[in-house]
Length: 592
Image (cartoon, rainbow, N blue to C red):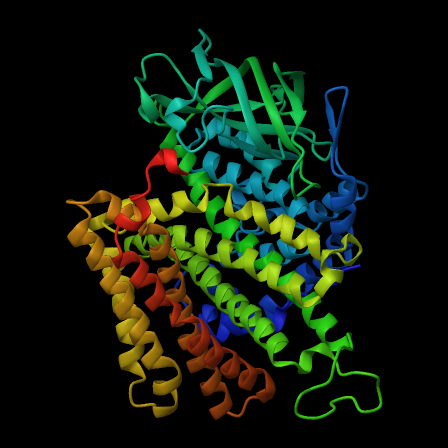
């Protein structure tokens, strides 16, 4: 059986020593002192480790089942979902007007990391509901908000997003689902959607589907798409679930991972729905949901890897194999523990340095969202929009890679289902695919985000790096280990951006061929910035006489490792980008 322990100490370090959240001039942040966040994180961590984590393997083993049109979740999920609701965890950062607790998003994200790490498939049910809640909260009428949001905040009702169709994945302009207007202002929705996570289940009274469809008069492509609220049960005037709507689950997908989440084929046969937002502008409303979802998927990518890493460390400490080349580390035993061997240490340091950097990046992204929403800060909005494909794409690519590395520590035992490491790898794999496959994230980054606002967001990112370096350039200890590597990575990122600007118009394929490398180059540079900030915070704590010097010394050692062993990858990505499109496009399509 696998283990999971919430990394509360590291979360507190990021929240308070790096982001300094309790001193930020934002609504709600003044309440976030160390004692308060400690209490929230301890309580959510206890739920994650004691309730959700033991159900992770159960969900993987049992999966969901469809019987007589009803989806049944694995044993124990319903009781755990009730605990999640009763504890108010589904409402943590939701609007108090609709029953939420009104905490900043950064706290909701921190709790979400623990829930996803302990049981990703389970956590998706409330995670998708939160995304649907956000879309209705941003674009719904007062009546729609009053009808749906209180019960979605409490997760008495859950939510979904319905985009993909059998013939239309990324290219939503091809979708065929139709919306026929009715005299009462509603629409009849007809079509089929696939890959609908949490599409139906037995843990909520109602499921509120947000469905993309085409209404008459919208034209071709995505410009003709509208977004509709289509509940599983129509809602009575008193707010209770009423008559069953004309929608059904056609099938449950058999998947590589996340078996505990019901991934449904949804059939809409003239189901009654109501327009959400403006007619023919459904993509605008849906992106409210998708941008939040993409940050959440980036979170999933590294949080599942965090759980895998914890198990790898425990195994490396306990498993006796071979002898240390520098002398017996366990002379009274038949062999030394795995963790004494340099290659195992390299493997674990790869994992640890990525995970702690990823956490800092995700928490910073959540803070930027808070700043954009709570303070109407356009610069923060533009910066987090730029970072969203990086957080989604880079953190899930590296998260999957990290889960595989954790499995590798176990050797052959990692390949055996009994150990549980296979589930981490299988669950992490979907994060690279859904909510926009990572190749699409890279194209979005280079094709749209890089030039957005005349390039102001990317220039703002470069300025953040320059300011960080300048603020500490007199610190010789930081210079060699952190500032110089960060400066080199920033130069590589700037050179790549310049290459795209120079080549993009005359040779678009050159930019597109290098987009994936650019996403990873950007990800490494972003983690380099995070590690520099963490090093500054750790050194300040040590200078002030911290009560936990071992933690801060370990933080510095881990940061040095990332800067020395991982950050130099920016040069390799830049070289690949500069090779242009020719090596990529040289082989004729019929030669593959």
